[in-house]
Amino acid sequence: MQDLGEQIDETQFTVEDVALSSMPAHPLNLKPQFMKVSPWPTPTSQRLPGGWNEDTLTKDYEEFAQQLIKFAISDFHSQLVSNYAYPDHVTQVSWVKEAWKEGCKHYKIEMGFNNEIIKMIMLCTSHLTGKVKAKLQPLVKSVYGFESSTRELVGSRNHHLVQKLKHKFSLCYHDLRDEKTNVPHSGVFRTKLTQKAVNVVWYHNTKDKGIIFRHYFTPFPIPAMALLYTVAECCIDKWANGECIDITFSEDKYKETYDKHITNLKKFATLTKEHGILDTIQKDINNSGQLHAKAEPLKVGDGECLSDDEIRNAIQEFQEGSTGGGNVSEDEDESDVQSKEELMHYNE
Image 1 (cartoon, rainbow, N blue to C red):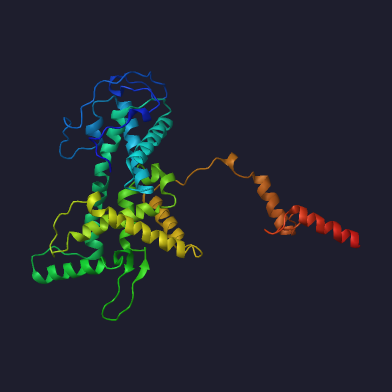
Image 2: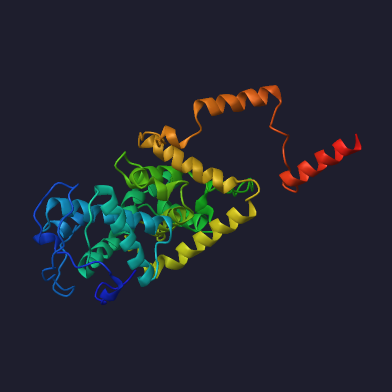
């Protein structure tokens, strides 16, 4: 992810600068007036306290602006999770701009953005994986059976388990190979960790990203699965010496691992496409997540569907065996069918 000290080319932005901090509060359905921006602290003078988050970054803005910025941050995070966690700088800026537009649409307002707002949204990206890691750590320990102990035997078992899980994507299986009976792995991408992790990270409740931004998570995206497995691998690495030692999750250390998981998932999807195995897994993950969050089913306006009469007519046609002239195969269009009917009539 991009260096925040690097200057963003402001010629990329076509909307006027907006000083959100200088704007008066107003109902969200009103259109605020565009204003020039007040100076923003430079990255070198901006010190982030421990435990910083969206609240500390946006606290100097009016409440309506805080809501908009936080929405854009969440939308941007969802794009990173669902598309690719480590995009280049130009792509990041593009996604942030799209997230800002979605925020304005969500709150029914029109508001420009500037260089500093873009940098603020990107700044929050640096702790996205940190949040995922914090939520996965206890799950990895319990699901895979790591133990905290100073006993040498326990430490040796932890070390052996790390090697076993990291061998040929073994952590992605529901059941590991039984070394005594030589029973192979089973349940690929059906690991107990996957759904548990998905539920706590993105489907905790109806206000979580998997629900609010369900268009990014339906079906559950391959890059998100890859990110989970990569972060899980980082949490597994903590036990490599037998005892739990903290390891920083960073792009430098784990981007290559993340890319391998994406490649592996895509290869599996391609080779099993005919059977729809991964498609089913992705749909199941999202559906189970929605149930866990107790989310309402996605409502579709009745006007967007076939009318009751149209559906009843279709049922009647099916029952009567009438399909309005018969089915037309992929290899022949209606004109071909009409020509055949004319020929049959002529022969009579």
